[in-house]
Length: 389
Image (tube, rainbow, N blue to C red; front, side, top):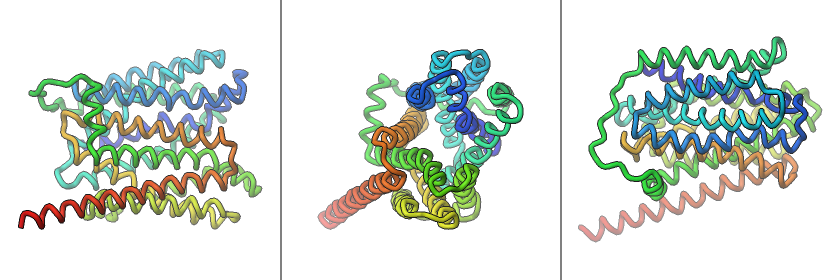
């Protein structure tokens, strides 16, 4: 069962990653201005946030399987509409709907996966799911670029739409209908979301997701510019990003994934953030190709520590009744991080060096604040224990 759920995660992310290398050229071919191209590209992540939040409430109300099936069929429908687009305005509208409906997929898939996980093994479970995410990050852009260049861009959309319909049919028969009946009265969605945000460990997980993808947004925006400024071919940008993905996959899939259940999730999270910050600082001064590859290996190591720890933290501090909404918010913060990271660096028109340092500083500041928070929390617990002796 779990391997099949990981295939679902893989296809859910391939939808997003396969369009990274083709959407900007597609928008440009329709006559969109540079500013409008940026809006078209960012519209997917913008509407995806709302899809994540809506999906979270529906998952807890109707079950992850139903939301997942609806997400696959609706997203496949939106993908099929791309082949009829003839203006930039139409493309913008499709991107909005595509992002909205695809926002149902990842929270539903991870909720189903988390609910199938064993108690005390959620860290390893989330690490293994990271393998699926990493593989999609490697093959998705390559698939989109190769198919669009050798055949036609419409075949990218058609192929993924067919894959989603097929996996939805398989999911209907394979995934169990084992959602626990809700015995307590459901709160209005806004009240539940507020209560989730007010839970300290969940708030930390959400901010960790935002910080991770803020750095990822800066990296995606700045790394190609840095490679170009060093007079290396554009293919090296893809190779560098693949290096980071391969490093993360190795840590996710090898026995090293046991560390996620051996040590505290918040400790691994802070270590991962610090390592990513260090990698970005080193990237800001990188001037040779071997040095860039070393930096990306280090970045991939930090990513591999951070992603499973924040997702496992979320699973630990939710139950099956609130987990859907929590994952919805979690991936909304993911999308927001990408939008803010890439948009802010573009608006400020900073150099790649400044952009990397800016992202690293945000990660270091957040890591320092977390250290203070957990230190004070431990001191309060020690004082409470001493007073009761």
